[in-house]
Structures are given as C-alpha cells and as structure tokens.
Length: 435
Image 1 (spheres, one colour):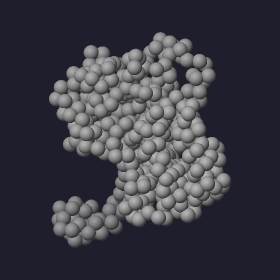
Image 2: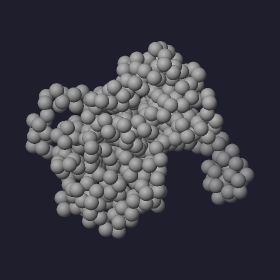
Image 3: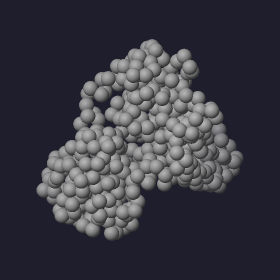
Image 4: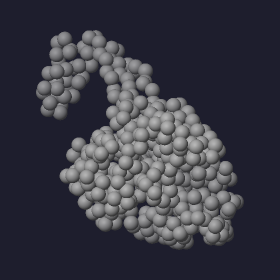
C-alpha cells in the first residue's frame, strides 16, 4: 500500500491519492464489452453461447430450482452451512420487509386538492451474481430477497459457472431461500447482454428485463453502463464494480482487526481497492505490518497482494480531516474503528454502508446483518445509496381534485401556463375553473 501524508498533497496529489484503479476505466474494457453487445444484439443466444464458451469454458445453462435439486444441494453441505444460509436469508428478509416503502397519506395543499405517493414494483429485474473465482451466493440473497419483498413479478438471476461447469451447492440453497424458480449459469458482459436484449437457448429463454442489478468486475460494470445508454435499454441500479473499503482508524484502533478488514476486501479481486486513514503514523505502521503477517496464511494472497498494490495508507491531522477524506472518496464500505465512532457518523455524507466501531465487521454486513451488501462503487456513494426494496419499485404521485379545489387552483395554474407561453395548458385549466 502506498503511504502518503494528506497535509502535504496539493489538489492534484489528493485527486491521485483517491483515484480508483485505472483498469476500471481503460479503453480495452469498453471495447470488448461493445463487441460483445453488438454480437449479442445481432445473433442472440448463439452469440451469448459463443462468448461464454470462449471466456468461461462453458455454455449457458438453466438450472431449475426443483425440490430434488435443492435436496441434493443441501445434502452436499454440512448442516452448519445450510443453517447459516437460513439465518442470513431470514435477516435480509426481516430488514427489507421492515424498510419497504409504504404509500403515503393524502396531503391537502389547497382545500379540495389532495395528493399522495404510491409505490409499485417494477415488472422485471435482472440479478447479476458474481462468481468465477468464488461463488458469491450471499449476493444472490442480497438481490433476490429485496426484489421478492418489493413484489417484482419476474426475477432473472445469472451467475458465472464454476470451473467444473456446475453451480456450487450453496448457490442452489441460496436460490431456494430466495424463492427463485431457476438460476442461469452465465457470467460476464455476455450475461448482461442476454438480460438486455434477450436470448433463446436450447433449455429456455431469457427475456429482456426492465432493470439490471448487481456487482461485478470491470467488464460487468461497463456492460451495465452500456446497457443503460441504449435507446430503450434497461435501467441500472448503480455503478457496482470491484469492491472498496476505507478504514478510519484512530491511534487506539486494534491493528489486527483493521488489517483483517482491509484484507477481507483485498481478497475479492485484483481491482478491489482498500484505503487506510489514520492520524497516527505509529498505528499505520502497526496495521500495515499486521497486513503482511496475515497475508502469509491467506489462500487468496496473490489476489490480495494485487489489490493492495492499488491501496493507500493516508495520514491525516485529525478525525475531522479523516472524515473529509472519506467523503471525498465516497467508499462502498466505510469502517469507523475509533473511540468516537458514533459521533463520526454524523460527519459522514458519502458511503454505501458505514460500520460503526470495532465489533461492526464489514464481513457481518456482507453476509448476515440484514441490509443488502450491493452498494455503489467508484464514488457513486456521493449521490446514490445501496440496494433496498425501493430499488425494485417506482413511486407515483396520485392527485385528486374536487370542483371547489379546481375553482381555487385552476386560475393560478392558468396564469403560470400563460407566463410560459403554453396556451393549451392554460385553457385546460380554465375549463376547470368554472369561469
């Protein structure tokens, strides 16, 4: 991890210090995704199959979540694993049921003029679940369950095949816990293209979806951007690319815990980025030494080292400046490992999820606390939040006007319309005014 002192950096140096890894935006990624999209748009399922064979070594496949398939998957896992999946699924469902938006009461702004907001689920959702080097079945729970709670009619879940071409048993169990009827084994930009344009395969069809959801690598993130830019293309949830974690650690923070949290994100992906911010040079030294010690026994040490090469260890004057750095960066995950963590939360304006205090491990949020771990990356947390049930819904204003209300408000609307030069608008209001 590169060390730097915030107070010595000029504006350009500070921008560089908080820059995301260059590969996330390099032209090669964009060019490859565009080629895949053009091909899938032209040839449909055949193109998706060709790209899947080329990039993942396996053709797309639909796995039906039947009682027999689920029973076999549960039998392949130890009881402790299926129990943990059940608890995680229940916590995710409890949280999202409790936070599902509700229709508002009527608001009367003028006597006889009432309005309210009502919420409706979107028609369909494409759920991208990362896989490949590690089956992220937790992401399936964090996407499919909020979509179910929201009431989405059609949920299409896709995930890359494993090396043997089979879904991990935990992915099957997670799909069952999320009450899905099928899981498609397709990954990468070709999966996003299939969800965008639709694709027909020998064992089923993927119809285009209304909105795309889920995290992924640089190619998946770019594919979502390109899909959303198409005329009539699907909406997307947010930029949700390679993982990010910023840890604010004061001089009393436990180095072993801070290092463990940094590595928990670094092992995700070579493009993941971790940042340590502290006012204590001594504790930065201790945490980075602990990172090296823990690396020695990590199974994914090579991936973590590649990620750490893009990491930063930033010394600041005090905790106020640490919060300033965090808000400028807008991390996907923010860990506050300080004595006054509860107080610092009030200073944070940009983060996908905040973990308060040394016991609030980001890993708990990743798997079982309840809120979805699908969060904005690449600084999008400065303007966007993470996945909630509201992400799978739209709100509509509903307006009701009595005759008396129209008589009172129509002249106002007509006057404003004529000020804008919109005579037809004004006449439509006049007809309600009784004049």
